[in-house]
Length: 427
Ligand code: ACO
Image (cartoon, rainbow, N blue to C red; front, side):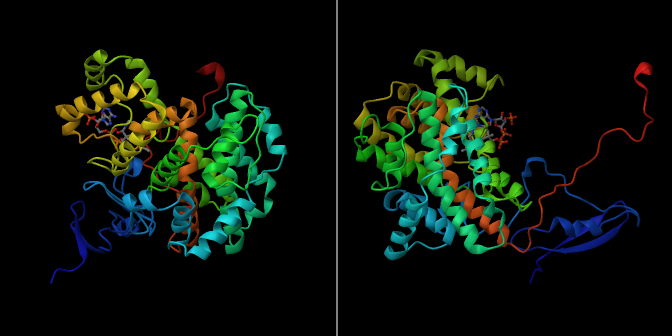
């Protein structure tokens, strides 16, 4: 019977070491005993971008990147997208189980109760320039919420953490809608708690002179998109939330770090970048030239490729179906044709096949958001609203994990050795 250990021979010293293997991993700290001399610091692993390092144990989201599987708390994403509401999924991610009807009713009412924001928030949102990027407004405003709720610092009290999680889920859409209205020069619309979570958000965003006339197909499509974005295990923004939260700062500050990470074009900002790319391509006949440029290393095919998925992103498959529902209501987005053709060509091209580059969640989501009436720079805000339950669940899990400490990676120092200071007139 094979032992669950790894035997390492250090060829520098000839010494053998045996380290335990648990859950398909070895503990990096077990390598520290491997030294060439007693004053040696000990062996470390070098893993920029965490390509092969598990930074936590998590029970929230499971991904099998080769087989295109995504599950929240064990439930397949396909079933959740089809049958659950966004608040049900948020409850599932945070509490670990699907709510009973009574639990869901209480949860929904609790969230509704916290949708309002202090009116001073409207004052500092008004201070942003008319053309401020809504993600910049969002991350600033969510970070600023910590000053309205100083009690949020009390992160060791479970009831207090629950309250802040509710506040973030409830006030996220209000702030997001305010950011939208600011860009348009429209007056802010406060929450209407007769509406459901999605309906209220859409109303705060689009209503002019009375309640916005709801289109149930579009609202359900938006809800599905938010569900598909709700968590994705240890991605860049979630890792940011965990790392910043590991300093025991309040959750508003930690989540605002997640929003900042999501803003980047290699992460959530990719949905915006896809639309800019489609605009730049302009017409179908320009696609082959564009693909050649990408293959020559001049630019990337945005919305393609993923660190974990090496097959079709299951979310992208579901989003294509949502797109059909939406375009039946709104008419076809003319850029869809270019996107479909790009996908067809890329999936047949040796460059993309060899590198296992498939459409990711962002490839089609932007086209849908655009058809729903959201401007390009707003797409990542919608992603942030969807990801909020995941960030909060991961933050809570990190705080309760006895293995976790303040996140503090090591480095391999490659700079100068000690050298004497040179006065300015001698340089
Ligand atoms: N277009 C063209 N080539 C690509 C692309 C792409 N979109 N993505 C990866 N490649 C190539 C790289 O050039 C590299 O080729 P090489 O081996 O010849 O050097 C190879 O594929 C591997 O790429 P890496 O950058 O090493 O892969 P990594 O896992 O670090 O990056 C990432 C993943 C950032 C998502 C990347 O695929 C990318 O930049 N995609 C475009 C941006 C995007 O769509 N981001 C959204 C991701 S999903 C999300 O965050 C919600």
